[in-house]
Image (tube, rainbow, N blue to C red):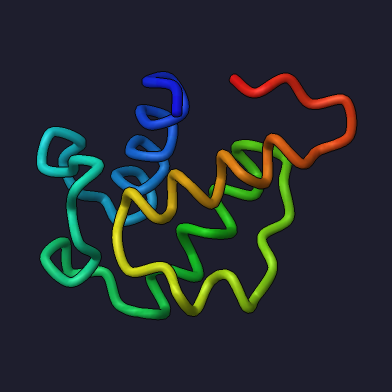
Length: 86
């Protein structure tokens, strides 16, 4: 997983939740960041826009931390037609 992808995901989370970027790491749990299920949906919409991907609903339910979110975005980017993983 590229550092650029991680930083883009962290920035989307920070912007969506209006929390300082430096308080979020790839190992942050949503619960410790104060992110509930409604917040996660908002973040996922922002990630879809940021990366031009579509995140399936069934994938959303199992995501509990930033690392899982990054891994999911990476997997979807790799699956895009003609995609070069960033």
